[in-house]
Image 1 (cartoon, rainbow, N blue to C red):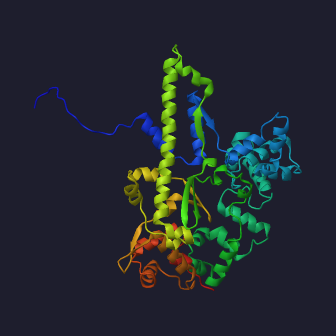
Image 2 (image 1 turned 45 degrees about the vertical axis):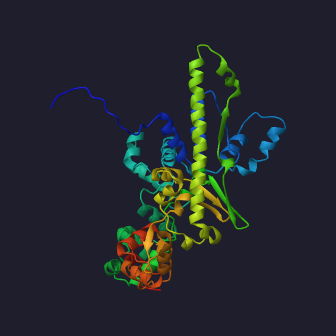
Image 3 (image 1 turned 90 degrees about the vertical axis):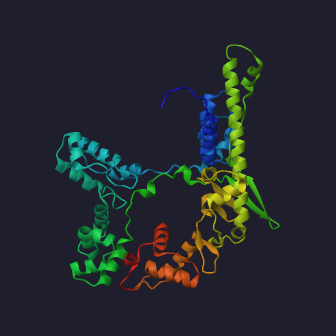
Length: 442
């Protein structure tokens, strides 16, 4: 072995800034794309953004502007009925507590406890922590916590699920009932649906345990959740639309939800000037062109992917029945449109497709293949739908095990699925196991 200098040619992928930007733009949905472009505009004076008109956030911003006069202000104020100021959990509880005869120090501690409630209404600080913070007795803190727990909705101020349920049961004067005993002493066993074990421990019939469990399900485990502000991202902003006309499907990008960029006229004139800022302006103009190209590429990729999905899943777009979905993988689409599988994965991530029957996520059209007895194939979505139907129609006194479900799928639908796959699909459907579904009374 000896050391020396050698020339060698090789090919490798270089992750340039432009490539990273194109990947970032491809994978963000419409509701995040505006924020991303606004960040780019802050760094580049040549970029001017036309904010999409379809975004609900745009409306809220325009309504909340202050000091606007004239006809335009009148038009904006006409939308005030759309913006509802929701009362917070703190406000609701504070109004109830005003009449409490508390001393000044106790009032401060009580307000601290109010502000220490999380969005579900649970207390996030202990009596010991509060006592140390305000240099008071732990017993005083416990008394104030009990006072807080008297407020509506029942269950507020609890420090655990058990305490939350017990507060609600005490409010209904059910301290000596079977439901109260189960929550107080055996909540874990109930959560695991160990009905027979509970029946033996409490010396009652399994049917009585189930009746108590059914009643407990009527209680609210998250009493403060009703006051949580609505998340803006709960609004769906479809990236692509599919419409059917005379038996033909038309695919388009939803421009009302997609921001666009243009060259800022105020700075465009500087492109032809040669001075100390020329280099910065030229670099900014190049970045503007890269960004615009990445946006066009995003649209083109989304249209190609959607077109292939519609072509393969054409029957679904007529019936909108999930059982009509054909097995489709990311690789199938990638091979058909001539891109890498990872590109398809990024493109469909968090993207929404608008149809005549509502909005659906693009990723929901991709499903694994399941072999059929006749040599054909079915989608995993179809299998999940069949599993759900079988569970809904089963005898609750004798629920179907995963192995029996697998056998029924093969007998009724011709789907060859293993017990482990059935268990996986069942868990994805949030269906408990047969042991936890079993009931002792109809």
